[in-house]
Length: 127
View 1: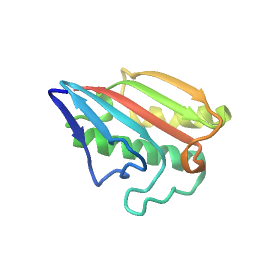
View 2: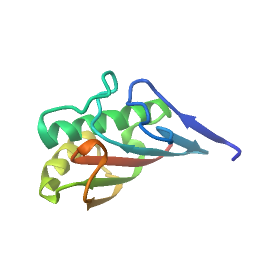
View 3: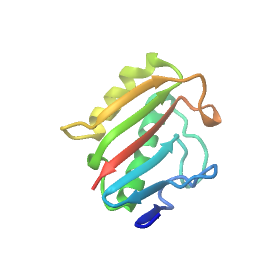
């Protein structure tokens, strides 16, 4: 596809499958779902759902930076949780990360996520 650019940064975890960290077409960036992997060690962060969520947003921010934007460039966020009882904790972290106006968002409970993590988040940016 013409004008399609793959976004990649060492400041976020490398892909653990056949996908790119993000793809940019025109002024739109689709960031792949991020899990709470430390990009240096590629290990899951410890400390529970709050620590996991903070790491996921840090990974997303690193990719957004590499794409020439920021998380405040987000127009849509998709959150997958293995337990919706963690919804309020994730909301609290998200409220610290984003400035208003907030992006559109979906949040769903799923049966399982890669590597047994509790949260995965993906983002769509408009630069």
